[in-house]
Length: 358
Image (tube, rainbow, N blue to C red; front, side, top):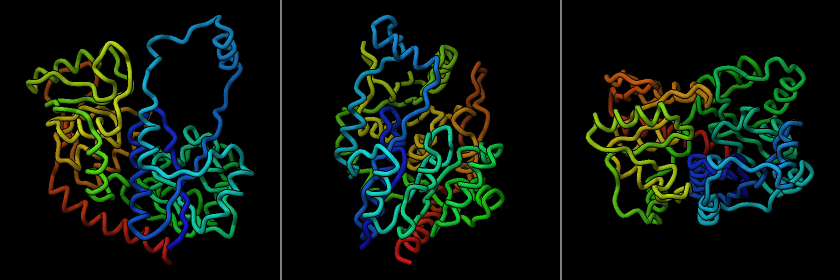
């Protein structure tokens, strides 16, 4: 048994996929016989002058936070972490990071878009630059989020990242494009593996859903972070075509805008017939459950990760067949996804097992 640290975006206060994949990876490490703990590190965001002025005005009561940006029940994500994620104390600096990481025999970074600088904030931290050299460094299903290294123009940062990656014991990426970036930009060999939510066994998923308070599912559900008026209008047309009004699984159906509990979100996907979404992890779970999926492309959130997923699972993107203002497509399974998943799970588990035991 090894003491294993894990670093990713488990600290999210609005992203279901981020907390679920983190808990799934920890669950897998424990199943392999290791003591797994998440490094509770969240780099502070860089705030521009305009943002600082806005914060000050809101603090002084001279400017109000827009109502449409206020969503209640962020505590839902913390409640999930308290039940499913083991964490260190909150890490506030690189010095604290190094001191706490020293207590582990290996640190895994991943999954999610941890290698996308715009999301990671402290880029070198998520390339394990604060991990002592005597601790094994492993990347599991790490994602750059795009087909290219977004900081290619920053030669100093690129060189620092290359130096850090050269010290990894084992590297794997969630997308084939990430494997290529590792090789072509950083001179590092990487393996293509499954996201933790596709790798983890059913016992984990079932344990999460057991905590759901949802009484009955809906035939059609949708999960979209930025649901524009045009999307909502098109959603009605899709619901009419499918014979059921689409239910929002991101926010509760009430007069108050508030997040659903994480188990409820997962249960609503499990019990639906059709899932409408632009979310990577929502698509992973819907396909895992064998649901029909209406897919809404969203370039800003990283298209390459979905293209890679569709290719790996042999899923075809087809026109929906109705006229809409916002692009939507139907995902069509060419073969048996479960057969593909079983093969890929064996491959991904071998990588992780070898990296931790080797």
